[in-house]
Image: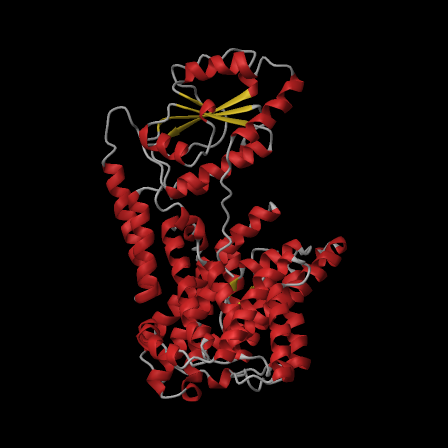
Length: 572
């Protein structure tokens, strides 16, 4: 946040990254605003306020913040609840922005209390089921707008009313939504220089204005600078306990959504974010967005990746993104009013499809049954019950299942110990490593199950290992590996191989060995029954080779290993 230390060499990339991210954010902000029930302008205000202030005060320098799919789903619930309690959007507006403001305050408190450090320990199946559920919810709520009708306020209402809606569908609306989706997915095959959602928005809206189809439009959008709405803040109209619950729901979801995006940004930029500072920035950004009547939001993965790929490198890019949206608001509001609702429905369907965690779903038959059960239950609860209850239930189930796994591993041979720091470790009794290769290898002793609480520390191995040729993971004291631990292992192996370090394993037990082979995480010829066998291979097949042969060895390793590319691109 020390702007006076800004490196001018980053200016061009930051400007281009921010402008590109702002252009991408425009159709999404409008779509999220319409879906929320507060109108397109609320989405735009939220993107402007949150985008600028979260960038200034946040802890991830390349992150672009604004309304997101998950946050909009919860915002819609807040708005609907306020309308039910007060009678109309106008009467409930004050309590709505109060809840949004309190959510920002809670995020700020989370950061000041250093809670960001603990959010990363949420198990992967919980996050996977939750995010997939959010994606499904977004898609379901766009079914009625796709058919040219106003959507019911609940998932059950959508399913009940769908048969009647199909009999009264609007072919014009269906064509516009279909055309929008088609452009979003096909235009990147032509060029990725222009964001496909923006192309779909402009092209389909322009065609509709020309042929004048019978579809609902966004309607009037205010222009000019947003006004402060502080005098409208109120706690009246709803029970205080319900206000706190809704604000807490938004804050927790905003924290999870933002920090997951921060992790994605770190992986791409090879930097490290400050999770607590990021929560502080998100809190301040959401507070300001609420004060101008905007939707709450979080770090947005797709917009962040667009910013990074376009050259954004510092927090200035996020500020530029917000200024671009403010500039658009000042001059183009009259044109945005003519955007058809079915076009925004098509954009949101693409957003929902992108949020679904296909990685987790694809592996559901291969991961432990307990992980799969947690994922499915969280998914169902997210769609049909409540978001916070879904996450709470997932955390409780994951914790109970983990404790059971621990109690099942009480044997004399196994001593569960925490992960040691990555320095030269004391050898086990059977490690008689010849002197001429001792400095060329690193032996990492792993004890206890590799589970979701183990993953964050384990992922530091690639950064802390010295310059060596081979890393040996001794696994004979690892009785179990869950889905999060497996993905953490995959990340470490990929990072080490990128540094030219070969990874071999010894002593794999039944369940970990089955998981490794099922996912083809490492070639079978680099898995050894015991350390002695591995040592013979090291001397005969690898370390006695001439230096120039090492390049060929690593090329062969890359061909042998069928990499599973695992990414977190499931939030927009």
